[in-house]
Length: 357
Image (cartoon, rainbow, N blue to C red; front, side, top):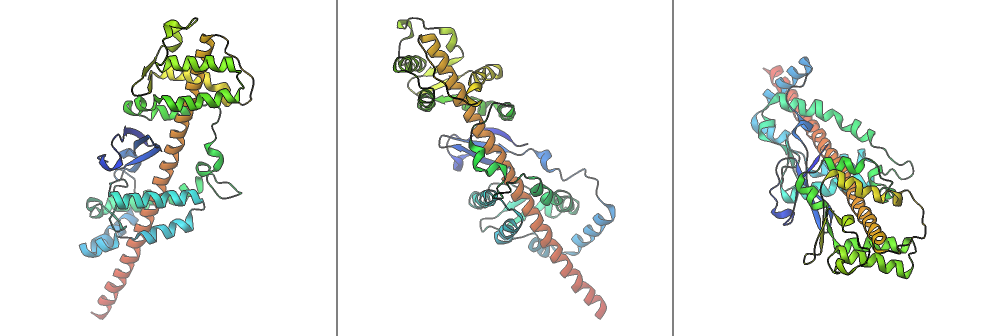
């Protein structure tokens, strides 16, 4: 599984992406760095078919360096043609096309050992190209996963879209383990960024919540006062019934209009637990006659906002991981076919020369 290892604070253009790292766009204010671990693609230590490997090494050694380099080049048209034939989900196809274009423009080593040139030519690194065993493993161990990977993606019978690109996927669902799954895949920097809540975004969530549950005017005003206390715009000492303990673990930055939420996993779990009834469905009239109850409602909205953010990150992460895998395996498959066509043609010429000799 890919991990979220950093935050692009100054834009994607300035971030020094390393191998198998790509930007993961979350929203207009947040882009993270997604990294595929080295064990996703281990080119050493595999048990290979001895006879096939021997034949492959023989073919590999017969090619001159120039011929090998040509054999290890495929155009974007070849890759995208295979994409249109093999992948039924229009969302997947668009995502792969977008990622490929992104790599052509950036030149980042996101698919290493595959490389993408500025003209859209796909190839492999020099170290992989010249090592017959690694190339064999890439083509016939990892490359064999393409069809299985595509077939394993659940698809809608109605429109052929996969679950990750289904229109229903974006609706918040009841709380489950997915928030914890994505939480554990984040570096500390990413976690800190996720729990940095924009005050205006929280207010939008709060106002939606107030409308949904038909709060009366007095109760609505109480909840908004509790919100204004949280963001530092009202003095809590002048508010009768205010409970400071309820806002423990939360810190506001009035000038930055941010709310810092405690990053401890147990605290996050407790906060999200407050939001759970919201995702279970149902609308009911609610009241907040006292400021401490109003604070509870604000905390519920904070939990809703945080859960929706984590849910969105989880969706984006899974979708982009699928996109990366699809592009990678399509690229490997196209390179394998190019190599096979080139070597078969080369051997046919060699056989003719031997015959005439």
